[in-house]
Length: 117
Image 1: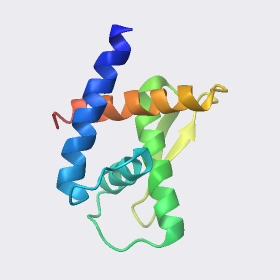
Image 2 (image 1 turned 90 degrees about the vertical axis):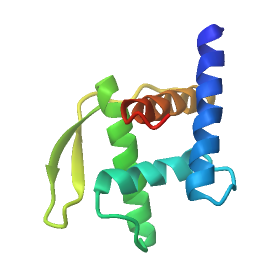
Image 3 (image 1 turned 30 degrees about the horizontal axis):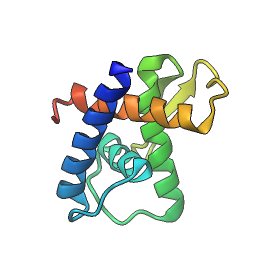
């Protein structure tokens, strides 16, 4: 139970900080944070992205976040400098709540590794 409380507290702190910095105080959700991570990992700065590029940014973020768990591995950069990952292990079938916990845990770990908070 304590692990859940620690994750919840870290998540709330992270959301507050990111929301203040990137969303003018509007609260970011998981998808918004995935988008930010995708932009960061792409490394081309913030610009106007097309709808399909936004989906690709979120995919980049998910791959990067789940790489330490052994699900993905960086493969290469394409000609447009977009990173590509290969699947190492199929994701397990998780209930929606379990998926959310996994993503929040991975997001918190990502920002801890960056010493963001």
